[in-house]
Length: 468
Image (cartoon, rainbow, N blue to C red; front, side, top):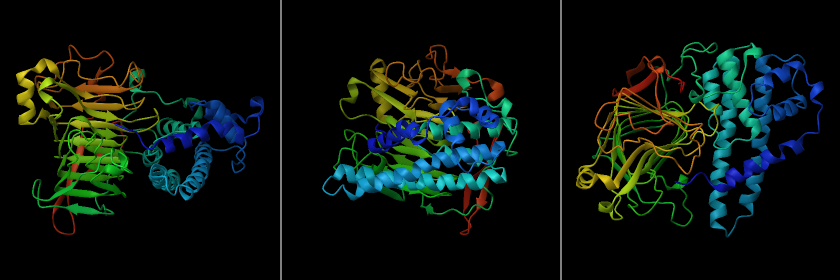
């Protein structure tokens, strides 16, 4: 699996390294106490103090909300700079296909990031801190300043206005679990019952309405991001009763069937067919109900806060000598910062293989390895709850990405799964059995009638730490 274009990451790394040059040296002893206290909650307090002390629009004796808004504004300034830089690259990219493609993708992502900043600024004064954190979690690559904004949003949401209680984001591996109801923002919000989606796609049923494509990342001018047969950018997307397939083939590498960048999106009774990177749950809050997902290598990946309920997850053969064995991984979550509210939740699902794959597996199980997930990024987070795991899941359960990368910062959890692959006795030591008190007590789903009179499942509320 490939990440987003290197130019995007390089750009933000360049901006990050240059941040210290955008501000003159400062004397930390002269920093206002409100700034110094709030910046203790960030992962990069020196950069936080420097940027806020020199931000001209920060009022005297700022409130916690004003400190958070100012931190976001400073980070937003980087986006404006980035947009200008990428536009210049695009203007000079004639004749360079790879640069043109990368710059075009970057502009799309940066424009969307700017929109998310605007939505964050709208949400915070109205007390919608969960929504604000979800919007800030959109970013794929963090500068120190944008990470600090997310850290402050975390503390403001969880601990409220008392900045003396603020602290940098901790993880479940640190023993920290966010309360199901935090101090600000009230109950966990979800999709309103009067949801008006930006786009809808209804079919006649799985296997009846089929959308196919064959792009893969090995083709000229195609990246993993642009290989998708169907890609959605726009909030409130609803899809129901259709099949989406990438037919690029088993040896094609990254070939996405469906990519989703849509907050409060609902996908019901759909099928996604591919091999490597089938479903790209790229960002924001997504809900999949009764969806069938087929693939073999990292075939559910991305950095969304995504819930999969009642979904058959099916491993398919890899055609390069499949009888000789292979290693398959179901998930590769891409959480890059501990302040992000993202993760994958599989609830009441089924993990199995196709009939063809299971015949290969049973013929020689020792040469076939199938893992629940591996960490694409440092703070990867995935849990399986009340899910049936067939025998194809290796006893270790989870796979490293490379070496010991992310093994101390990820959170991979299981709770009350069943089936021959659910035995936890041989699981890797860096995975976890979720404490019962931290398992969500309810997932509230309601069938809402749309203007055609059809029923569509909508997520109205969820009591889980990947807040909706």
